[in-house]
Image (cartoon, rainbow, N blue to C red; front, side, top):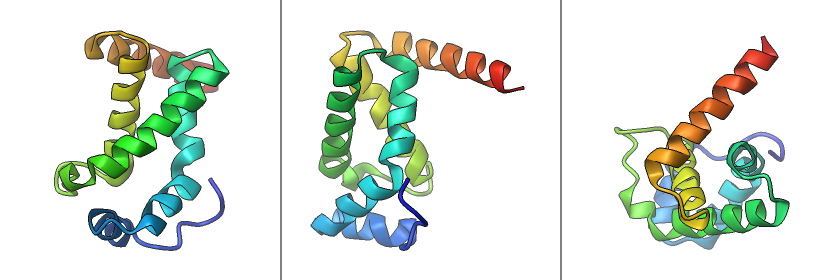
Length: 113
């Protein structure tokens, strides 16, 4: 992440839904490293990780109307999209990739503690 998030997530979501290009740039600057970390839990190939990250931000742009702040935070919504895109790119069922993610997450937490 590059520095502090300078705009509120509500503002960014509103800008995304209004198709303001700066909003996706702001999201990329603020969240790309975190999303890449999540993708890295699922994918070992660096080139594929970057492809998935790119496709994730494209999906965020395309599906911004679907985000409902009442249902999830912006980051959780983007994380779910990253996992979905990972499943598609790896030709796996969503349930498989979610299980792979949770196993990797549990292992990571165990190693941190």
